[in-house]
Image (tube, rainbow, N blue to C red; front, side):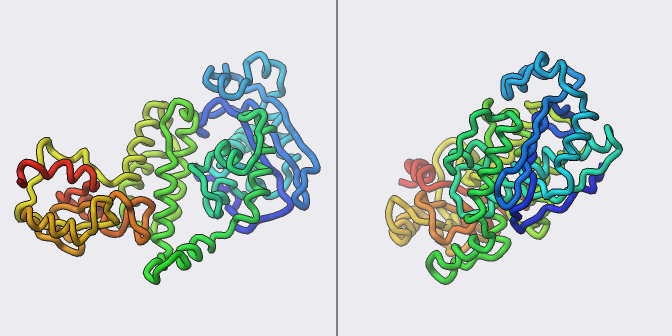
Length: 386
């Protein structure tokens, strides 16, 4: 189903309404609303709030009860969705709506329910604190609401209850405002050292994709967020078609394309998809190495990054003595790419750089280049090369 939702804004606003819902599933295609909340904000200050439980018409899954604390007994006498949603939409009005991951979750559910229950359109423009955080100067392990709240010194006393989450999202937004500036990403890169550190827009976008992949998690604690994580990555992929042909865009797209408007995935299936996406955040595949040592005789070898063992010149001389032919750049003729354990200021995509990226793109086209980390490599060049 095509949804004529409102626009995703990039300019910050001072007058808006924070929205948050709790529902019976993290999959927006099958979720039933059990709680609605909103905060009306004017000139950056909360002036009014709204909250209500909602009777979903089905039993609340136990994992949702555990997550939210909302039970079947609590919603037994709550208004039904059509009544609650009519009042909720009246409260929200035509405001810009703000929340965390609302562009893929909350607004999708509200849009569908408004249409099916009230034959009404929900087309409010949106600002997503998830996007704002990604385009800020805040350094965070990941961009989940809990992580951002902790990093910004925000206490969410009732996490996963709609009104408490609204207040947390409001504080996150207001505290991110002075840190939000997309141009700071490129400005930082351009000012971070040598002249060649002036990264292109595509490189910056790949950095963002890498950051999203490294923040994914398949621990049981986050099982309810699998759908959110997948939809966030899919949305990014859909919006950055210009990255086609760049590792790992095409591989990630193949996975996220499996998500469609009619599919309903089990937690296990979603977890497997997340695990596949995570694998692209670490392209140094030592697991590909067959048992035994690596022979370097006649092999074309490229070094990249900074090495803890010694200088590149010393390592090159050592490998040449073992029969390797050292090359400066990666090509279809490269046999082995060795990745230094200390990284490099010039690496363009998070933990991997241009040479690794080139090698992975060649591998995707059928090349058998071995990409291996420094430590693993030197464990495997013993007996056969002595």
